[in-house]
Image (cartoon, rainbow, N blue to C red; front, side, top):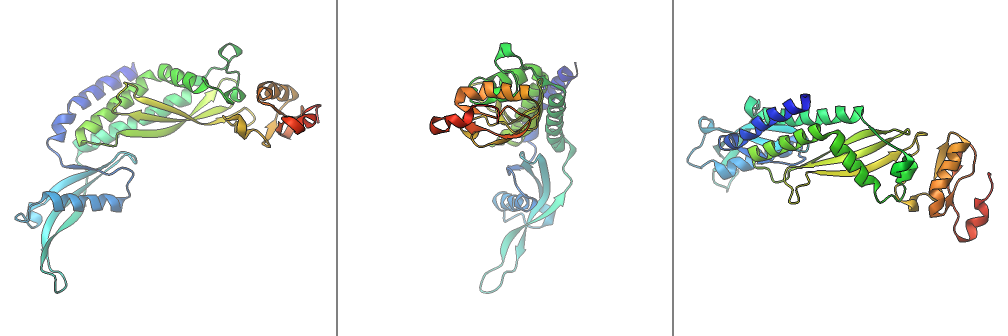
Length: 288
């Protein structure tokens, strides 16, 4: 119910975006420092304030929108005749003064911050199911897995539907309100695994998608119940030192990585994954 109400509120916010876009001055600055946003404001003043409208009495406000850092910096900008060192003539140059961002403008960014906060809260509350029936038994099933990322994508779309749609609508709203070109935004989330361990997921929300898919999912890291980072590519297994909590777990890992020609000694503690190809095959037998 809460997600539905959030979406209704965001639809209202989106409907006002075009009206706001017609009444405010805005410039996009993706992943910028404060000084870079200030420079953008100066550039806007040079390009948009007439040399016949000099002085602070003719100042205008411009909003510099940084979608990556979830920030809007608002500046009062004006041009003023400035004396330059000889032999240069006096020239109209831009000046800026930081201002508080107007509430109707800040509301858009606040909505985006809230949407991603809700996504994180939801991610903290869900657990990705693991079972032999699905082919994903635990973290070690992600090695050379062609379907795992797609399964995670489907799971997130189903489990976080309301929160994801709210984030999409918010991004569409802010992109329309400020005329943004760079309209994708990413964040990392932790999703627990039912068998133990967790996935570190990078979610990218898109405001504009030609194929109608507004969500991109990337599995950044897979961590098992013993706190080992599990390579998603089998080529990263050889020589890896991992911690094993039980002999049963060692046998289970061997069952999964053995298909790619790798082996670990069947014992607890820290063990090294061995490449069992060719001349190395004799070293991959026994429990030592």
